[in-house]
Structure formats: C-alpha cells, structure tokens
Image (tube, rainbow, N blue to C red; front, side, top):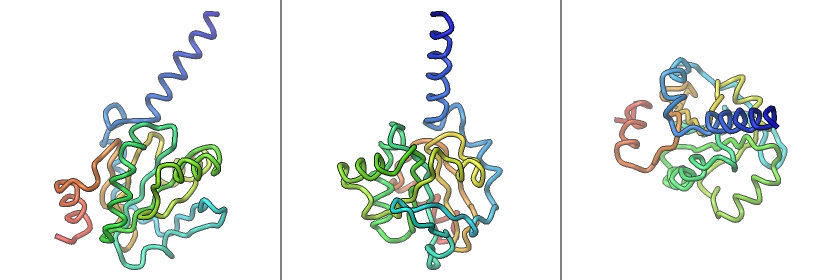
Length: 175
C-alpha cells in the first residue's frame, strides 16, 4: 500500500513537471537552444508520412510548438497558435507527443483546430526530446526563415497578444 502511494505521488509529480506552465522548468534551461539550426528536423505527419521541416518553411519564420492532448496548458494555448497560423505571418507547426495519432486526430476534429497549423506527430516525444530538448510541454520554438531557433518559450502563452507578436517579430528580424 505504501509503495503504491509513493508511486502515485511520483507519477503526479512527473506529470506536473512534464506539463509545465513555464514556472519550474522555466526559460533558462531552454535558452541553450537559441542559435541552433534545425533545418534537418523531420517528424511524422498525422497521416503517417515524414515531413522535413526545410520543405515546409517557404521563406517564412516558423513557430514550432510541442504539445499533447493530456496537457491542459497546451490545450489552452492551442487556439492562439491556430489563429497565429491563419494570420499568415508565421508558419505554425504543432507537434503532438501523445502515444498514438488516433487520439490526436479525434481531439483536433472535436475542437475544430488545425486549419492554421501543420499538425505533426512524435510518439511520446522521442524526436523532440532528443533533437530539441523538449522534456516538458508546452514548449515553443520560434525559428527565423533559415530555420535557426531565435526564441524559446516554455509554458502556456497567448501567441496573438501584441507583446508576444512584437517579441517574435523582433526575434526573426521583422521589426
């Protein structure tokens, strides 16, 4: 009984750390990724194909978000990411780190999200953990047109807020 209780407490703590609001995991550790070119990143699409990032960008800056359907902060920021993509100034890529694509597809269909985003899939975060250091979600990388990371935000954000848009434009050299 005591062992089960300890395991439950540990699981709750790990879940809390993995689904960050930007507090405990914070910005500091993720800033080491700024300056890293990730043009060679390839992730699976929701339909099972492989999508190289460099074939997507088309000269626009990219906002790349790592999320999951079980992460409340991820879900709260998703509508603003979708709106950002629909606005057309940035390509928005949302990489779901759930166990399987069926749950992600079903969730997106029910919410009506995705029209403004490219939806990719990374089963349990294997690629994003290794190539982007995404150990907690949500985490979002802003890339310049050369696909170099110029800004990293850990935790939930309002991506359509004027201050955030200003910071992103400045980071990609549009201001």
